[in-house]
Length: 320
Image (cartoon, rainbow, N blue to C red):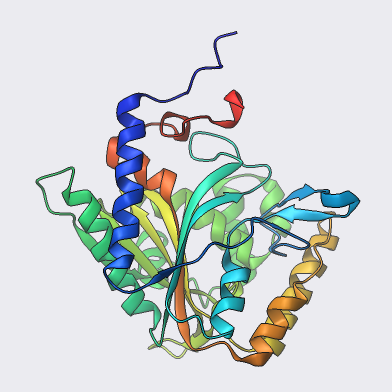
C-alpha cells in the first residue's frame, strides 16, 4: 500500500508554506487582524448549491463549516473591525481536479469598503504573489456580468425571459434543463460558454444577476436593472474567489434563508436550519463592509502550473 506517502513534493510543500506566510504578512502589514473561528457548528449554509458534511459531536448534530463566513460576521457585529481568517473549510460531494472535500480558504472583510475597493486590494494581493514567480506583469481585467454574458452569447442576462434561458441551457447541455430555474440556467451558461472566453490573467466579474445574490446587497446598475453587488474572480480561467458588498439587513437575510430552505426541500435535499446566531448578530448591527473568500489551493495550482488540486495538497482525500 503506497498511498501512505504525501501526494506532493517537498518543493511544493515549501511553496505552499511560503504562500501562506506571504498571505498573512500582506494583512499584518495592513493592520487586518487574523481570527481563528470554529470549523464545527450546529448549523451551516442553506445554499441549495452547497452541501455541508454532517458531524455528530457529543451525540448531537452539527456540520463541518463550508467557510468561516457566519462566525466572522458575528465578530464584525461585535466590533472586531477589519479581519481575515486563513484555515480549513469543508464541502460534501465536491471531488475532482479542482475540488477536495477539505480545502484551504482565505476570507477577509473590510469595514467601510465597497466591493470595488475590495477587488482592488485583491488585485494587489494576487499580483504580489504572482510577481514572486514571474517576471511578466499580471494582466488585470474588470467587467460586469452583463458585459461578459452579452458579448459571448448576445443575450441580456438581466432582462432575458426564463424561457429563452431554458432553451439556451437545453442547447448547451440536455433536455433536463427545460424546467430549471433562472439562477441555475444562468450559472450553467456562464460556466460552459462564458468562462472559457474570459481573458487570460486576473479577471473580476461584478454585478451578478439578482437571482444569484446569495449574501450580497442588491442595487440598480447603470441601465436601471436590479443586480447583486457580488463579484467572482478568475485567474487564467480558473475560479478563485467569490465576494460581496455584504447584506446587513437581518429581515432580508431571514427571507433568503427561508427561500433557500424551501428550494432544498423542493429539490429533495435535506433542509439546513437557518443560523439564528447570525440573524441575531445582523439585528444587533453589522457594519457596512465588503468580504471575499479565496481558494488557497486553487491559487497555488495556478502559481505552480499544477493540473490537479491533489498535486498541491500534502494529503488529498484519496490518501486520507
